[in-house]
Structures are given as structure tokens and as C-alpha cells.
Length: 115
Image: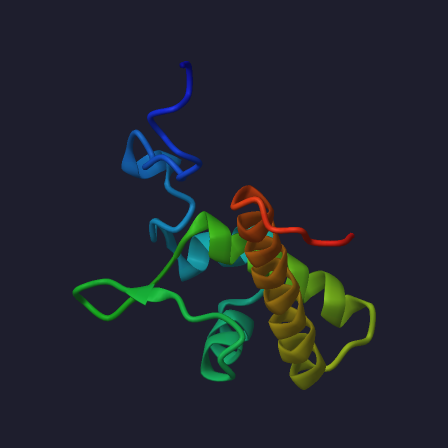
């Protein structure tokens, strides 16, 4: 019975470097990666578009997942969407993802779910 021990659960990352939610990047590194000014990243934090972790010294620390979210934000704003609009788009994308996960779970339980 290969694969029966995980029962569909996500496995833990083998190291912190494999964890997309681990806060590794400084604001300067993320600014360089995305071609933004640190002030723009601070503004996105202040407007709750992203919420980076904080180091013991209070410095922002971004995860790979947050950097990817910021890439989405950059793409959306470059296409003309305002920050309130970006917030709404991201919330709707998250809701769709949550509903897809719920649907997959129901299908896994053997419930009849129409496509």
C-alpha cells in the first residue's frame, strides 16, 4: 500500500529553506528582486496588501510566498488596477482557492459533487 501513510496530508518541508512561508528576505532584497523601492513595499504593508513577519529587531522579513504575492501585486498595478482593487482581486483569488480545496476534500470523501 504505497502512499497510504500520508492519507492526502501535505508533508512538512524537509528544511526551513523548503518552506515557502519561512521569512528569509529583507525589504532591500525584495525591493531588488522585484525592481521596487523599499518605500513602495512599506506602503503595501501599511495598506495590508502583504503582512511580512518582523525580526526581533522589528525589521520586515518576507517569505517566498509573500514575494510571489508581491509579484502578482506588481502585475496587477502595472495593468492599471488600484491598490483597493488589488486587495479585492487577491481576496477573491484566495476565496476561489479555498473553495477549490473544499471541493477536492468533498470529492475525496466520496460525496457526489457536480463539476
